[in-house]
View: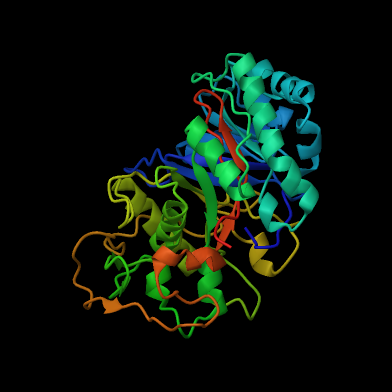
Length: 393
């Protein structure tokens, strides 16, 4: 989540069908982190997850307690190979052993659907992680194929000699996998609250902006961030690679200099996002593509380092009570591709250099300053692998 954040050792992402009583959003996920010493046991999390209509969970490891606790619940899981194990995963035999122990052993009782390989690898400036990422992806994918956990049954040898990011994107194309990013409009607003309208980052009614290159209208920053990645990928020749959001959220509490970190804003961001996703509309650049979004996070985590906000992204407190009210936000949400009663959109500034502000064109990929690209992600059944390739720099 934080641009320089190290990988988590024991995180879980809950993919919800969501809290609103009359609204179930199947494409929404919620990260369930465990960097804390006061969280409920996995056994106690099961009814909590059920109470909010959650149907999918994403782990940042392969926590046996969690996988066993959720057996026969129907909840879908993503498990993770940590950055510290990437070197080991270069070895095909060790990758196979890992998949057998941490995936195959729990099937079919626990519905494990994907494996993530590493976390925010290419944002850590650690060459050992970078060099091990693609070989680890290849080995894990081969293990899935050998165990018949991959429907496509395709192998990838990585022999094309080009830039590292392109090699990883080639891997996506070959395996039909999505590209995951962490997108946080909050960081942009925090960096320049006087320049960025709060309504634009909270999905509230606003005039929006017009991208001068595509002439598309954007009424929220998150969609601009997503389409910046779409455009950057297309410019590299990878237009068909799908983009998914592995993390996005808003803190309910922060330090004095963390402008906007309030329960009210967190409720607006999450509530409006849920309503927007429920409408099953894509971004202006990909209007017919459903969004697949994971909200950060399920719990506040008291042992996370960094500013106060880092410990206050949760929907819930460790005791299971809500960190802030989660409620339907009525008509506050703005439809990205529909008309509203808000003022007419204004052109995007073309010479902005303010930190965190909107760039001259979404199509340049300059929204990268608000993004944190994530890990390699395998879909166990369909060979989906999502790489942590920083292709926008």
